[in-house]
Length: 355
Image 1 (cartoon, rainbow, N blue to C red):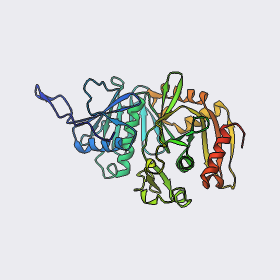
Image 2: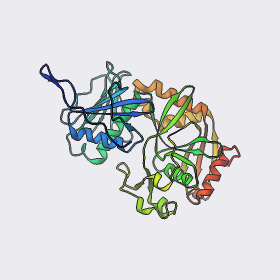
Image 3: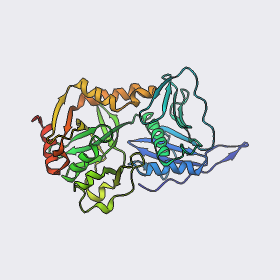
C-alpha cells in the first residue's frame, strides 16, 4: 500500500515534451486518479498527502485510464479569474468562483481550476508567497485539490467520523465541525470494541441504490483533554506531531492501539450530529429526514460552492438522509468518560430506546 509508482519521465518528440516529468497514479473506491507535475517538489507534496490516506498507489498504471487528473504547477503564475462568475467565500479560507460549468478556487496566490471543456482535469497553481507556502496552507491546498478531483469521480467528502455498531453491524456516523466531539466519540467506541473507519474525514459514494461511507484519513487526532481522560492510557508514546490544520490536536495511528478494528467501508444507518454542551448528562433527539438533510448540507458546503459537481453531490446527500436515521446529540460530560458507557448510550439510541 505504501509503495509508490515510479515517476514517468518526460518523453521528447517533435520539439516538445509529451509527458510531465512526474506522474503518480492512485486508486480509491474503484476510481483512478493521476497526479502530474514537471516539478518534483510539487509532485512530492501530493504524494506525501496521499500517503496519509487509505488510497492505494498503482505500481503499474499501464492500460489504466484515469477518472481524474491533477496537474500541479509550482512556478507558473495562476490565471486571472474570468469576469461574471458567482463567488463564495469559504469558511476555512479562500474564495470559490463558478458559473455552473467552470470552477475556480483561490487562496492567497494559489489557485485551483476546472474548465468546462475538460471537467476531469484539475489544474493547480502553488502560490509563490511565503504565506502560500506555509505548511498549513500547502496542506489545505492539496486537500482541496484532491477533493475537487474526487468529486469529479463521484466521491464526496464528509467531515465526519465513522464506526460500525457490533450488535447490528450498521454504520454509525458522527458529523460536525471541529471541536464537536467526533474524534473523541470514535476513539471511545473503538476502545469499546467497535470497528472504525475514520475519526474525521470520510468519502461518500453511491453503490447501487445505497450510499456507502469509506475511510479516508489513516490517523486519528485527539485533543489534550481527550488524552488526559485516560482513553489512550499506556499509548501516549504513540502520539505524533500536531495536525497541520489544528495545532491543538495530536495524531496517532489507530491500528497500533485498536488492532484488527479497521474496516474500510460501511453502509450508514444512523447519523449523529454532536454538540458538546458541558452538561452532566447527554441526550439525543430524533431528526426528521428534512432536518437530517439540512444538517448534512450545512456540513458539506462544497455541495453548494462547487456547482459543476453540485447535482451529483446533493443527490448522494439526499439518498444518505433517506437511508439513515438522524439524531441531534447533545453530548454531556458522561460521554467524555467511560468507553463502555459511550457504547451503551449510542447502542441504545440507535436501538430506538430514546435517550
